[in-house]
Length: 206
Image 1 (cartoon, helix red, strand yellow):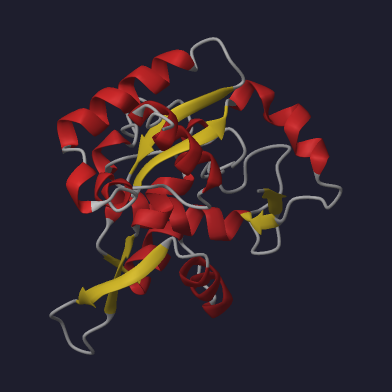
Image 2 (image 1 turned 180 degrees about the horizontal axis):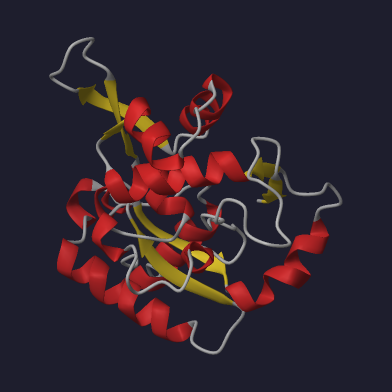
């Protein structure tokens, strides 16, 4: 009779096959009732697996929705060549709006516009919500009861975070580019010499 594979290898197979992060509770559903491991055993196996990946091209990380195996950032340039299609591009206005929501949430559209100094177009808010990065979290108790926006678990997952308090503080950042190496989230100074005025059509790579 074949022996049961180790817990670490079962979790590794599941993580490699999954198309989204796996929570500990989701991992427990992989096992028959009499064989369900407890959270301590799962975390121990995940810690061992993370150590196994040290010095390799992949890593095991914990994000808001659970655990996932991903390519290390330093190898992204090579791996990205597997896909011929160029990555999408987001406007600077969209990225600035996302940064304001992340750091000032809950925040209304009017408050975002006050901070940016320009209006926020409907397509920008729609795109952020369609990406699953932003959602309405209630309404401000003022006349008109405007919707308040906050970030989601998908936002945290995308940026490799477990909690919002893992975002670097604005004081720690020289500029907001450091939030993610592929996203330029800087707030350009209006009228800076040698730089164009900020416009809704300025784009950066995703």
